[in-house]
Amino acid sequence: MVQGRRPLIAGNWKMNVLKAGGLSLAGALAQSIKAQSNPDFDMVVCPPFTLLTKIGDAITASAIMLGAQDCHTLEDGAHTGDISAAMLADLGCRYVIVGHSERRSAYGESNDGVKAKATALHNAGLTAIICIGETEKERDAGRTFDVAKEQLTGSLPAGSTMGNTVIAYEPVWAIGTGRTPTLEEVQDVHALIRAELTNALGQEQAGGTRVLYGGSMNPKNARDLLALADVDGGLIGGASLKAEDFWAIAQSCV
Image (cartoon, rainbow, N blue to C red; front, side, top):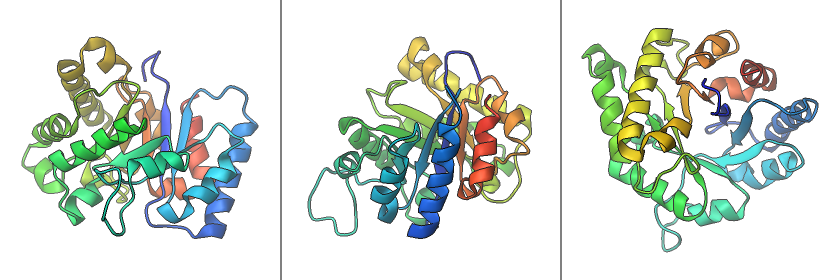
């Protein structure tokens, strides 16, 4: 982390937890952050759509922010089963994940589609967490940098700023596997992302844009990962479902 970029710890709950479990998890996190004066990090939780209102109510008196896991490209219309950026803003969301590898692989989401979703979020006044990352096959073929560059430049909307955009690098082969790249490999990719952001946004905006690491970040490795110059927080999956683990990762920023 570099001074001036406030760490962001984001929890992606994916398709997990029902109401009781979600409220218990959010309540424990809210209690922890209330007990810590002037935390040195920002925290956001992204529950399933079904829990957005309940979790939003549970964290409203705390410094935790509400996020969502996806959105549609359009503001309204005949799109059964979808939810728009405007609807998420109406529920109190501040951040929304787009382009997660699970969406790219399972639903065939393209860079252009991710860019359209991020644009919709910007138009609704929300911050897009744009995910990029290579598969194991791409990594073994030596294409990590190429994939990161292609996905970033293809998914980043015009008008992106350090205020409305966060980038999350998640090597697909490391998500939920317990495997992680070496610290040097993580820093190298994050430095590449920073350089590409500089080309696209200019030095000032790129220097202030937060770039998160995702992919089996946990309480044991978080401090080392978060100490890297171009790692500004984490997009946490499995470990975000346990309040003590998620909080321990956040404390690694201190």
